[in-house]
Length: 309
Image 1 (cartoon, helix red, strand yellow):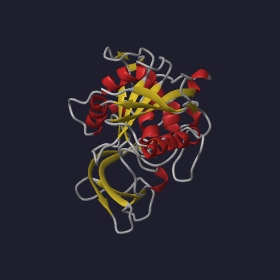
Image 2: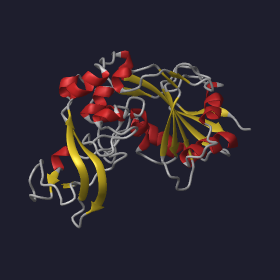
Image 3: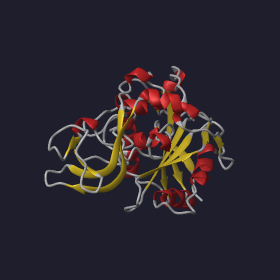
């Protein structure tokens, strides 16, 4: 079945075909995906002292490069999560979530960690569940940049805009990801993580009942929507309650990174995976992606060193 061991001071390894298949199943979004087998193998060797465990394995071109699985979470009504979760399949009562990630991919870790707190604000306010979609959050979980939102008619004007003949309105906005952007955490995401007070969160414009989203020759998007509304942080607090600020202890995340392979990993695989851990933890920041501390604007940090054997 293979073994579980520490590969570097920052990286653990699991050599187990079932574990690798479970992580690949998660990334291929299959019903039989099982991250909990990998969790059990990991905790056979390592103590229960991590907030998140990130499993990296080789895959081809799956539908997702990263998937978040909630393992343990207290009810957090102030962020839109009303119910406690304690998955009985988990060997850990502490770990908050497990992340399945494509080996060699650079972006998903910070995105997937954000799913512990976002995006779960109420549909009644106009938000979609899981990602920001057509909300002007411009965050790591998606959404457009509101500074780039203009009317198609009158051309170049700021909203409110003239509606089309059928009652929809055409807006022009810079290209964006509905599910994720390569940016730092947005103020609303930082608020939901407990890292900034509410007064630092700007109003959020939301395009509702989007009928079409097309690319323009200049790379921008034309979006036809039924309406445009604006949600303030006061609206969010009135609906969900105030999100308390995180404590100093809560601002340091303990994260374990695990390379999962069917066979003995190569030195190249270990070096690549360990190098990624150094980048995301800010040990060796680079100019092509954000590390966690930089993405949180220095308001939180990530501890990745594994316990000494």
